[in-house]
Length: 235
Ligand SMILES: NC(=O)c1ccc[n+]([C@@H]2O[C@H](COP(=O)([O-])OP(=O)(O)OC[C@H]3O[C@@H](n4cnc5c(N)ncnc54)[C@H](OP(=O)(O)O)[C@@H]3O)[C@@H](O)[C@H]2O)c1
Image 1 (cartoon, rainbow, N blue to C red):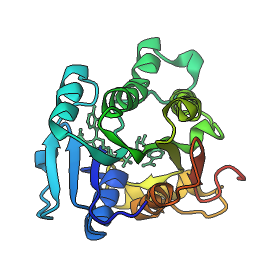
Image 2 (cartoon, helix red, strand yellow):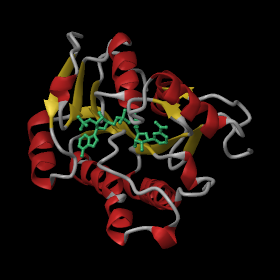
Image 3 (cartoon, helix red, strand yellow):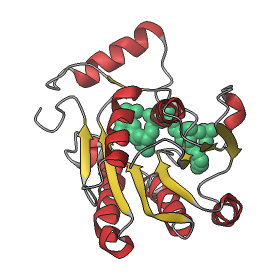
């Protein structure tokens, strides 16, 4: 699918991977991009084809009315984290924290469930998962569980929604505002968490948006996962 003149909806489009994707697709002459998050006012973007929309993906009624207003569109992307995720060993974890980590899945499934009716039949969906689902490292059980569920959902629904395509992009450690550290502390953190990867550095949000673009443009893939992880799986 070509990007020119397409109407695109990007949840979590105001930061990190979603923002890199918004900027890339805007430059590629999308007709209109709905760039959505809970606090879009944090972002100042004056691209004429981007409309900032305030919406919580977890609010089912608001997701429904957003799509009713949007009308027909071509591409659905969801990169919204949904909320806090629990980190650490499962046996030390508050189960509420573990359960809350699944907000990402509920946000993704809300947008697919209620966004599919208006999505064009030759349209496509890209959801962002994460490497812990492919190879879980210590302390990542909640991330792995949610990511695994997102991937299984996508693979399983692909046949139900065809000819619409759905694919997952699975990032490794990517330098985005998701990590609130600054300066030397931030650099040390990324060095430490990527040192065993085959490519020992944090990825850039733009490197992930390239894979999102591939999943949109390549009309011969559906129900699959594209890893952009610096060799995490083989590390
Ligand atoms: N960065 C990494 O290392 C990494 C690794 C693996 C997977 N991932 C996945 O990649 C995706 C993007 O991550 P990122 O690093 O780009 O994160 P980010 O910079 O924190 O951006 C997250 C985006 O999601 C929006 N968002 C969060 N909860 C929302 C909600 N309930 N409703 C609507 N919008 C919501 C945020 O805006 P508001 O706060 O304004 O709502 C923001 O625009 C996530 O699914 C994340 O799990 C990231």
